Length: 355
Image (tube, rainbow, N blue to C red; front, side, top):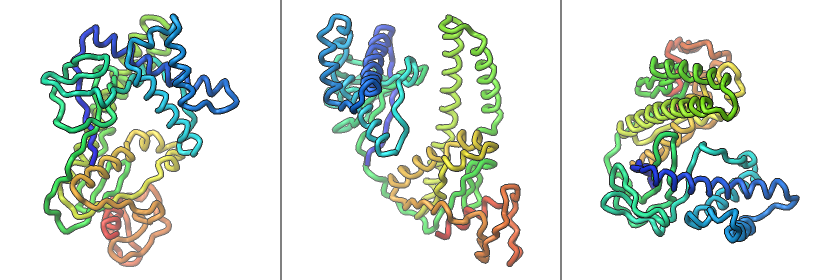
């Protein structure tokens, strides 16, 4: 199976300028396809946009397009074409214009990407040093160079063999929530990282800088300075959350259950609740499910998603009675039939483990 890797690049001022140029060409090509389609009554295909970009390279005003690899605008147009196909299939919203200094990234041709002693070699980029050596692989799939508002990274996927190990004969049910991030059927609680003191201090700092930003003049030096600081804070917030989810999923998989059951949450529907929407959007339920799914596949653990309408919280884990009048305020589940008193989330995880 394919596993993603992310390795930090050791940049120099000259190399950073080159990376900015490459990211700018990728953004220009992506935005060009959107602008051409917005001004046209018929949909303009990827092949036509690529021909248009090739024609632009011959003009003096657009000679800067030749400074980077031809695969960069080609792949950016392909990505835009895929975004439009997803939009036509009603899987996602309409493609939007990409902004400068926001999610800067560009494609690296996988055929020209070669591992070296100090890092890697790439087309029209030369030899680049990395903080750690690239793993040995026959081929590096879908390589990109990405900027995260502080460092540049090389991201790619490689073929990895599944881990063969003896699994324990039990099913692990996992109930996701807001009070606790997750509660397992082994009565193990994974805390919500957003409720920690570190994250609360970070929220306050972000609010303070956001207030500063509203008072800055547009296109002023101070505004750019505050924006950079805000991007760094958002980066730290994202990294803390991702690290917490990675640690939680790795810990759950290392208990070696034969099967893991997680409830299938339609987050877009839950977000309609105005009081809980912020807490739910910050939790990262989908990212937790995604990581757990690929880690189970890597270790040959069966992964199952419970049906959206399965009454995991309302059903009694002892007798199977369904309590229809259960509300969000009720944190302790009290069964009317057998008299069982149990934590609501733990009861839900036990019901999931029986599937």
